[in-house]
Image (cartoon, rainbow, N blue to C red; front, side):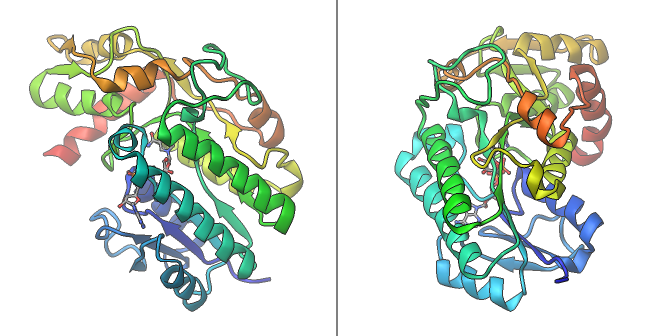
Length: 317
Ligand code: NAD
C-alpha cells in the first residue's frame, strides 16, 4: 500500500491552518505538505513542510504533486462570498480554474482522494429557508455561490466520468480563534469575539435577527476528516454534503457573550453583506450526511462562546 502523502492548498487560511495541524497529528508532520500563495502562517511554522504554490499555475502544481509523491489533495484556496462580490471575475476564475487544475492533475496522477469544500452559499432565495434539504431548488445569487454550485457538478463529473474520488462538504459559516476569517458573510461571528474582548462593543454588519447556519471549527475539521476517512461505499453524494452545526443571529450571540462580559454592547449597521445573508437559508438539514457517514455536531452556541472567550485572549495579547 502507498504511504499517504497529503498536499493542502490554501493552508495559510482560516480552515487551512487548523486542518493542516489536524492532518499532521494523524498522518505525521512530514506527510502533510502545506502550501499557499501567501507566506506560511506563523502557526504552522516549524511543524512540517511548506511549499509556495499558486493553484492557478497548473504546471507548477503538477510538478509539486509529482516531486512530493502526493497521494491526497485538500484544495482550500478560494475567494469567499463577500470578497467575491467585490471582484466577481477573479472569484469565478480562481474558484473554477483552481478546482479544474486540481481535478485534472488528480485524474492524471491517480491521486487517491481529493477534498474540496463547497458552501451553504450554493443556496439562493428560492431554496427553503428552514432545514434546507440536500436536494432542493438551488438558484444562487452571488458569484461565490454560482462558482461553488458549478464546482460541485465538476466534482460529480470527474467522479462519474474518470473515477476521481473527490469528496465535499457544504460548510456553513465557520467560527474559529486560531486563524482569521477570509472575507465571508459570516465573519461577524468571529469579529464579535475580538471586539468584545478588546473594546466591549461591536458594530454588526448584519441585522439583529439575521439567522445563519454556523459551525465551530473543531466540528468542521472533524466533519472533513470523517468524510475523507469514510469507506468509499458510504459516499452517496458526489456533489457536496449538507452538514449542519447550529443556527443563531447576531442578537443571540451578543446575549451569550453578555453572560461572560456583562457590559458588552452591540449595535447594528447592515451593509452589502446583509443582502448576501438574506439570500441564504437560516438552517440546514444534514440527514444524508448523518445516514451516510455518521455525521453529528458537538458544539452549541454556549459551548462555542465559552471556548472562544477562554482561548482568544491568549492569542490577541
Ligand atoms: P481563506 O480565505 O481564509 O483561505 C484561503 C487561502 O487560499 C488563503 O490563505 C489564500 O492565500 C489562499 N489562496 C488564494 N489564492 C490562492 C492561489 N491562487 N493559490 C494558492 N493559494 C491561494 O478561506 P477559508 O475560510 O479557509 O476557506 C477555505 C475553503 O472553505 C474555501 O473553499 C471556502 O470557500 C470554503 N468555505 C469557507 C467557509 C468559512 O466560513 N470560512 C464557509 C464555507 C466554505
